[in-house]
Length: 304
Length: 307
Image (tube, rainbow over all chains, first blue to last red; front, top):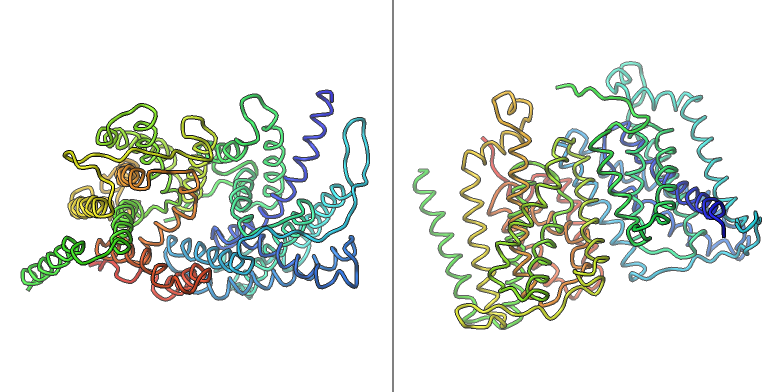
């Protein structure tokens, strides 16, 4: 393979990885933008989403087959279910803590994350579970580079989800309310916006997107396990910070940049694939030190 | 009144210390081993308590410091044949340096960013330990030599029971002295109101860094003893869940209060031991209890009384 082929191949790998990161990063960024909470449980929601998708796929495949039709229906239903789970978590764990000190709410989020992954761990006895899909390996060939239809469909459905989100946030009343709350909650209350239900809606959307990413990751990698949320949660946070936390286009951009950096990073001399996580966290730490507002974030003035 | 309270407290502590010292007379190996674990967690929880409880900084990568100590001892004794007792000052040095390396640049960040950076750092240390040659890769280092204490080889549970008990006493003593020192009061001030503290002339970055470094040293020293007790360490010992466990010990008991943190360490070790029969579900039960505790008593079971 020529250098150009390698570059092209890594570009494809990076885009796929990056679109998973972006979808999860969106949830982080939206929740952070609205209530300034770093939702540690978000990575675990992605993991739970993947398992819900797996169960639904198992239930639906006798009727719809294990092809794209079955995956699509399973994904939509699991997005709704996991979105509701997100709202449920917000209602029982975060609403009572909103006025508590920052440290307490962070620890509550950690506890939620523990509950989720320990629950899945005891349900699956810590084993890897195979994702029962049957998609074949056909694809397009460009010189020496081979792209499967699965890869193309996954990236385009991510793009579709993001476009829908973009219109939802920028063109609808609910989206406008979300943007308003991230600026000033009290003023929103005075304007008659039901702040609590908008926050719940944010959790719903964020969790549904993470779930979509989880199902897609299951389809793409073929097997899932209970600890998969931890690393991607950390990476997605990195992505959100790269883009500027609280910024929605930033989360998408950050996810893609991180995905590409990681897949190209493995090609660099001295940085093998076993160092790629160190590479990603190194970027995070450097970025937080030198440009904590990220690429598209606004400078925040902290009021006392 | 206050004097009498103090006297009563001293009596209670003396009584507990006596029980701890006398326990090996009646206890079997299993109990001794469990209690050495308890004392080990007392030390690391008190170390993390300095960072989380006193200075109010959320550290999610504390296992990294513990790893630095354990690997320092393991590498120096196995590869270079250094005497165990000489590795302790080295471990103190390296863990303090790593405390400065992480703390120095990150302590200016907001608290939630700090949490994520420490988490990332913890993972960097673990992955490095897994990929470097000198740390034995993913297999870790095994066959670490037992130390000699005045000619006695430390190999039985009872030896490590007393070793960790001494460490725990030392940790309690140092924590206590620190809490009421000038530095301890500065930590409390920074925790309650950073801006006001700075206005009063406290250099908040330096004060926080001190908390970081002292906490790191506690973890490092505990790591040295952990390495020789286990005689084998591997990167998987220092996973994120380890950091989380230590943090839970601090939070359950009540951050910022020494008896609270000690209780937390006891709960941490004894709860899974007592509920062994529940099997896999005990971690889930633990997590749920933790969540309920956070919602109902965010300050912990036995918190510090302010005022």
